[in-house]
Image (cartoon, rainbow, N blue to C red; front, side, top):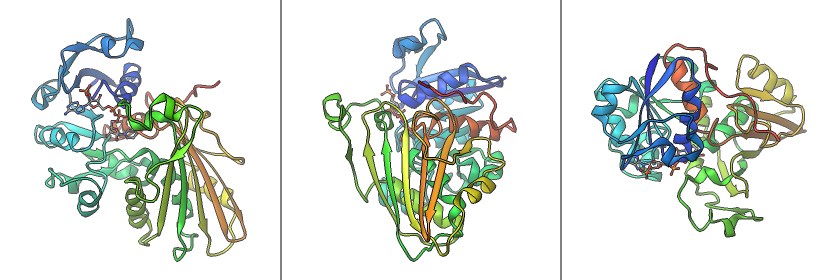
Length: 335
Ligand SMILES: NC(=O)c1ccc[n+]([C@@H]2O[C@H](COP(=O)([O-])OP(=O)(O)OC[C@H]3O[C@@H](n4cnc5c(N)ncnc54)[C@H](OP(=O)(O)O)[C@@H]3O)[C@@H](O)[C@H]2O)c1
């Protein structure tokens, strides 16, 4: 068994990591931590009572290095790079769920904060397996993608050769409230979001530069990306509707089927997708339709699984030469 650690275990993605790792045939959870420690897993997450019991430590890089070969960092950005740099120097592999290693230095510093680990940043591999599977296999540091960029990029990637880059791409995104993490804010307060839907950070959300940067890396073209996220009154799930103009008419479903014929965690549908069907799984469900030169792409994921924790474990599987789908959830929470 390969010993692994979860740092930030009190949060939403931390809990999902534990739930996957409990049943994983090759990874063994040997260390879990929060910023304060001195508690237990079931005290933090009553749903784990009598399922798994282990002490929750105050996060410490040397203690992690003593007990684990790989650490999942389920931490806010900035906190993550503080741990990652120490862990990497101690020989521990890292899958970081935050934004700290996802972007080029200039993009990161423009949209987040000054980077505190410029030494390791160049070795980070963007953890979208459909884009960088081979690089992830050789990586010691994987930057797990953002939830919105995961579903958006998986929808757009097959169509990049066909999209007319001289026109803008519009992305209409909707997420369940767990996407914002466990801390309650005005937007995520029950009374605000219940029976409601509203956009937030239109055209300035931090996932917009992440999507634009990865599209540029993949195609060499500078796309004009316009991204508007909305909050939905559901706990988990994310739906992306993307609109672009094509250079000439195409058969979008044929292109999707061909592009993803060997991808175990992308399901191509011949009708619009919903958020419930991939919920509880690592699947990204995709549908697309065109009308002349107008292209519509419709994709859905579970934001805390494919958009975070299950994708993180897929990346760890690849980093250890395991089967991509080893221990990864595929049965949806339906109904
Ligand atoms: N939620 C999603 O759908 C989603 C999707 C993709 C990516 N992400 C990213 O994944 C990361 C975690 O997200 P989340 O939703 O799980 O957030 P969360 O629910 O707010 O949990 C974050 C956890 O990090 C811990 N923490 C904060 N600072 C720490 C420090 N200095 N040392 C140790 N632990 C610390 C906190 O634990 P204590 O305060 O209890 O110590 C908290 O439980 C974030 O970077 C987020 O952007 C989230």
